[in-house]
Image (cartoon, rainbow over all chains, first blue to last red; front, side):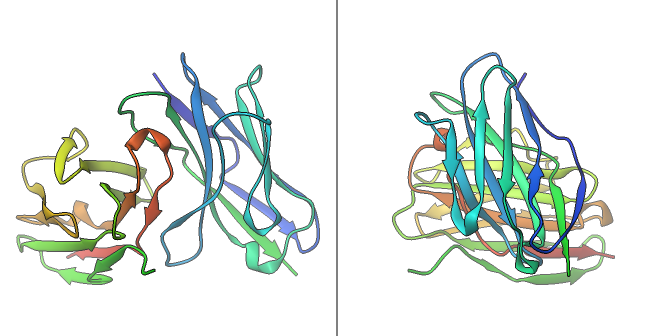
Length: 114
Length: 115
């Protein structure tokens, strides 16, 4: 069965520090991978996606993620965070082909402190 | 272009009452999803429509929940009768293509509190 695991429920970090939010997936078939961001009292927004091609994917707001097939990981990184990056981040995966559900991880709350 | 529009943003009701949540997807999108978000269970897919037809309703908790999509620009999620455990944020999302792309556009959600 397909599943997505976000290894950290909360990540506190100081402003201008680098951050990595970890995500692992399990699937017996190939998947598309996504990171969504949810700001307080808002819906989810697509941050970046991996469909095929280069394993390093760049998204909005300076975020990037690297697809590692051998480690079944899709970690999200940013070299220097801002206060405005404080939000909940969700990793998600969906299997290729036909209709398959988009499976979300439990979320990681990123708290950026001054 | 307007995003996905949900109403009401907040709803407080008493146990046993009927609740109707509404969603207007982005114009031209042919897939619509209803999700429920709680602290305990995270994001759960309740139902998925493609071209106004329900394709997957396996996530609908029980018969108290029903969803309709009478046309391409409107969908409702109804809970009757409501119970305190239904308290959650309900999100509607739409997509331009088939569900397997995973690129969803979410509304701002409807926060439901059942007393």
